[in-house]
Length: 402
Image (cartoon, rainbow, N blue to C red):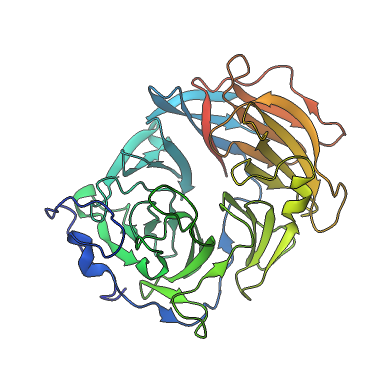
């Protein structure tokens, strides 16, 4: 990496500064203003989105007073509950045999947990306070260099950590993405996936009241050079790949792409991003969801697709947010072209839906129905399990792991 990354000693004193509209002040100001590289990435490796043949689900749980981690065996349907502690706002990830916990709003740290050591914590990595007293990390992705790259909702920097180092020495630096900001200078970064030496990060363009002021994008980061990339030299400002929808919620691999460079993205519909060519198109247009009343920005919660890339399963709130229903819909014109509901009476907060073979798993928080429900989707309508698998505390977020 080059000096375009802001190198910061992990224990250096900082001055607390909130993100305000306009120019930044405070410790992060020296990093703001690094121009992106004006070029398109060349993807030499498949994107690491999720395992092709998962065997377990890693689940964070919470009752919003405390939090924990549970593990579900997809083969047996048996859960190990409370294998580790968590916070009330923890997103799970997995890398190289280790659980990685992203502790978000007002916790602001990454935690690595080793299941081979009885789920002991091997490192806690506080994020540097720069543009915000609460930088609010949203996700984590790992590059081929083994470094962790952490987008932050309240700071225009990607934090770079070395989880192999001691916590006091783990902060490698930050990568400036302020060129993609809107009037407040912050692009509100969220999800991240690595495709070899290129990191893709979703940004939302919100003002301080969380009102949309611009299109969502996937922006590219050149990891060896530690620089964001402007994908359109002809358009003023820095450009990523523009979402055709709103509120990018989840990213899945596209099973129809053997190269692993296309992804499916849940927004107000299901979009297909070709990260190699820059093409963006609808796999399921918003009009299909609007036909069944799912036409507001935050209704679609989570999704997964079958191995053929022909059918999607979606968890979505009704328009009045009284319950979550589960739906299926065909991709790219496959039946059913209008979503069909097959289960209702649930609640959830984060992404808690996962398809493993012919078994669909969904984590509900609703009182009296909390836990992991499973559905046999080899038949229509899908056959639901008699009762949910308990995760201890209600499920908050989950990921499939090897």
